[in-house]
Length: 297
Image (cartoon, rainbow, N blue to C red; front, side):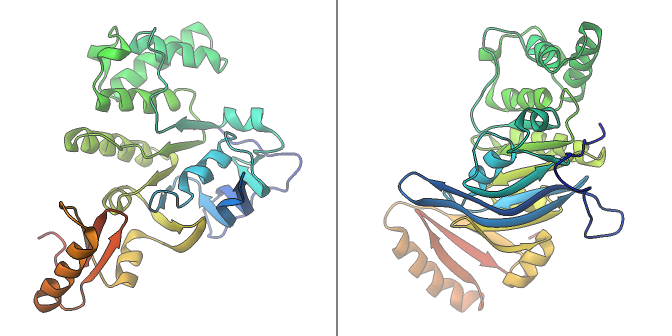
């Protein structure tokens, strides 16, 4: 892992826990879009080195905008963001060198092969030809893509393309890896394969911040999770702590034809008799059911 640089405009990073080093810190970070749309509301946040940190919430909660500000893609309205010791607003070019970003949309170069997407990314970040070739070969093997090295990007499945995007994002060995909805649209097998790879990166010490709409994904991957809504953090803890505070250890998302409010009311009545204490809530066009005592069932 590369050493993170320290901005000359800010003091050295402090830590909240012995042995942990804060590599992401926000202070009053705010984004207001035209039309007075408040997307992120005075966010104070810190992420430790080597941590997988999750931003969890429904559509429009502010997770994607938060990651956008931390990765220089979105200009904050006010507040401060320090990533890898660098003020991302004051020094965006320096900040880009210590981060890797995997956005929601496929940004692979369709005119290049799988291997070339990795090789030229390394060259773009200042790696020599020999180093870029070695790094591309290594990441292909690590991400189980060696047999697809010469393949054209349009020939890749969604899961393989997502793996390639993650491999490209960490090719230059960034201090922090950002992923925005990394498994959105993937089939269950591809999702599990990507989770396995992210777990390997985590064990190697890679700091990761990811946004997701799925509690299962946050529970599976994250050391800590911040639940966001309307641009604010409503709760922040380890997944186990959040489940305990909610009085639930399993969440089920139910969809069906017809009005979701009627489905929610029906489930509330049925589960109230079978499992007292179950929490049934309508969230947009779905119904989320929080259950206790069924984990692993």
